[in-house]
Length: 171
Ligand SMILES: Cc1cc2nc3c(=O)[nH]c(=O)nc-3n(C[C@H](O)[C@H](O)[C@H](O)COP(=O)(O)O)c2cc1C
Image (tube, rainbow, N blue to C red; front, top):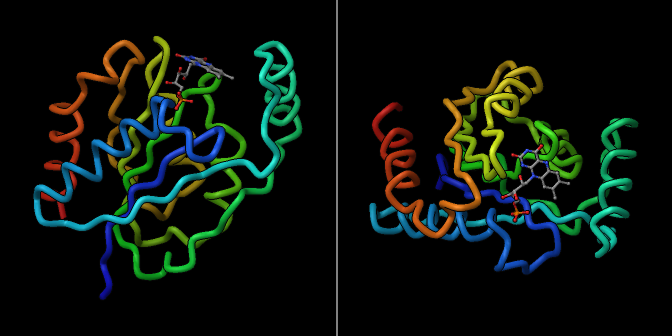
């Protein structure tokens, strides 16, 4: 069947159910399910794990961002051609996408698809990331960003539901 909906999220350490993005993605998939849409989920996870120490991690990420690195991912999605709508849940990393998300975006043809970005952040929102996505994917319909602050992750069901409604009503 074509025109599938896919929930894609950044998971720094694979099955990281504690991360904000995995939690928000689970809420989005649940919300879609309640509306009768069985959406598959897909995690964007770098093959090489970042250091546990935050300062070391920060240095590694900054080096990647400066060199426009495209770190290898743990897996590739095999059915992207059948996907029409993508709920993309990503963190704000210095007002940019994590490099691994760029690897994901480089890996498929997103022309004619729709992306609804949900940005999980620590206070800076996600407007820069919406702009970055529009620049990277000029032929993709990038919907207005949904911003979820870390302190609201556990209570964001209504916000996520509104975003899904937007996706479903604006075909
Ligand atoms: C490397 C790094 C850089 C970050 N930079 C920012 C930032 O510039 N602005 C902001 O609001 N939050 C920033 N944050 C906070 C994250 O966006 C936020 O905690 C997010 O919810 C993390 O999602 P996760 O738990 O799924 O990884 C940063 C976090 C990390 C790890």
